[in-house]
Image: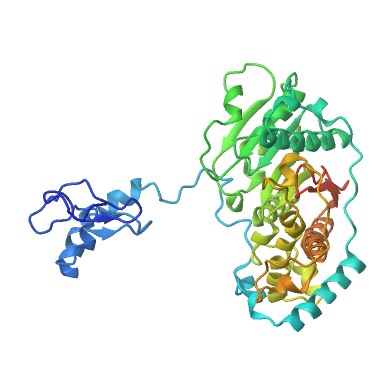
Length: 429
């Protein structure tokens, strides 16, 4: 941006775009527009507040104080209750469970403390945690729509292969049946439900519910909007944290006729805990949750307050601080992949390139990094064990609340490093 400003325009410089605001000053009191008049250094606070105040719902924009009540009723940031199924924070943890997050715990502890904790963590893993079951599925592409997977790009092929594997596990559990309601948590564009629809396109009694908190463009469920036959779709834009599943009209009005299957591909971090908490609450209320299949990912984004395996941690005398340390160690799971790269810089999980493993300690580590203490293979094993401990807390939570849960390898590591799915089926009452 040039140093010269247009004199008849607002003098505020937008920091992100580094250009002068294009609005005109509405009053001779200031050379700033009404949106930016709060930034005028020549006006006193009393004058500013008489002309403009920050919105109480979102201080990133401002409003006229005389227009406050009307603005609150129409502001896009106002809390909206979509129906009886929308109950704010109904799947969150208890407020009394809030603890410090310890984001820099790896930097704060000593090398000796870390090594002692890793020995303790590995002992817990080896004594209590069962390894994920291996995947024995073959020819997963038969569950996909009429798409030649080999003709797709690497990224599209990778996603479709994961979806095909998840659908194959649904078929193995005999869940691809009529009178079923599939609830896709964190649906995004809804590709998983879209491909599942292709397997059940003749079943008009099948229903899909897509839950996603963000606006999505190019949604797959839009392809089925005008279909008169086959499965039906509905989409709700809300956070899983606020979803009271048993009050959704499609489930509440048909709970004696339809069973519910909860699905998701790579439900990020703490959203998995919210979805599992939501499923347990629904099972206690309507008793028609038949199964849960969630491909896990992003353990490094878990939060103690939302984590459902707290009882498992307390039983092992693990504290919230220990939880933060285990969470930090999960990021080591991909250390080996980061250091095994071809000369063109493309990773093996995307290109399917088989690379030689190395057990040496990387030389590009900072002398202050805790990873310098371990070889690359050791880092990956530590990260994997940290992930499985966090997952086992979820397994025990489900087993105590009417489900039979386990972990399973649902696809190969050449497709995705996050290749573990949590599978739970309801116990007969």
